[in-house]
Image (tube, rainbow, N blue to C red):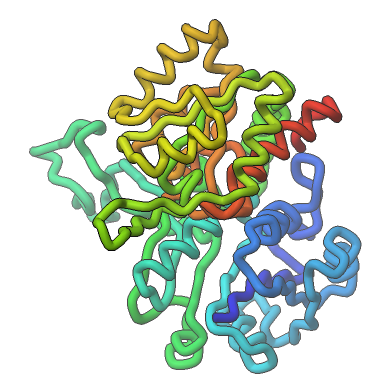
Length: 388
C-alpha cells in the first residue's frame, strides 16, 4: 500500500492573518505537525499544496527534499471552498492507497499519533479514520433541553465516559472512499483518541496563545529528557526484545525470535557502566537460555506486578526512578512508563504506550528497537547533549 501525507496551505486566512507561516513557539506553524509526520516514517511521500509562492518557499527552506510542494488552484483556496476540493484535486494527479490529511492548525500532533493511528487503520481494516479527544462536558441546545445527559441522573465525572469530540488534527482516507464519496470520511470509520490538550485547534488569537503555551511546555519537557542522567535501563521481553510472536517446535516448546543487534547494544550499555535489567511476566525457557548466553544476570521471569518490582529494584540499586529508563510495548508496561524518568517504546506499541513514551523507536519490537535506544543513550552520554 502506498501511504501519503497531504497538507493543504492557502495564502489568505481570515481569522489570523498569514497564520500558516506565522511563528509559534519558535517555528512556523505548519512545521510542527509536518515534521512529526516525517519523523513517524508512516508515509511514502509527504506533500504540501499551496497557492502561495511564499509558503512554498518556506516549506522548501524548512524541509528541503523531504516534502514535495505542489501548486494549488485558486478554486480550492476560496473562503467557501472545502478541504475535500483540495484533496480531490491532489488525487487527480497523484496515486495513493491511503492519504493522511494533516491540519497545520493542530501543531501538538506527535509522530506517535501517526504511528498509532496507522496501526489502528490497518489492524481494524478501516476505510477512513478521524482523530478526536474525549469530552466530559454536558451540553444543552438553544431550547434549554439537555443533549447528552439526564439532569435528574447527573453522573459523577469519574463515572462518565463522555463523548469523543472530533478535533481535526488529521484524517486518514482510502483512495476509493475519497473517489466514491468525495469526502474524507466514509465506509468503515475509525476514531483515534488523542490526549486532552489536543482539543484546541487554532482558529483565533485566543487559541493561538493557548497552543503556544502548550508547545513551549512540550519543548521544555523534551529538553528535560537528558539521557546523560540515565543510570539503569529495564526492558520488557515480549514485543520489545522479541517481535511478540509465539513460535512452536514440533515438541510443542514455545520459541522466541530475538535480534542480534539488540544484544550487542545491551552489552555495550553494560560495558559503559549502565545497569541493565530484563523482566517478563512469563517464565520462558527460551528467554532464559537467551539471557544466559548474553550473560545478563539481572533477568527476572514471572513478574506479574511490574511496577512493584521496578520500585523494589530501584531501591536495591539505590537509584531514583527519575534516573531509570524503561522500555515496553503493551498495557502491562504502562504504569512503569508513567513512573520512570525515561519512558521508551517500540514503534509498534499499543496506542496508550505510544502516547506515554517520551521516545518512540523507529524500529518495531524484536527488530532493532532496543538497539536504537541503547545507541541513543550511549551517543548522548558521549556527546553530553540534550535530546532536541
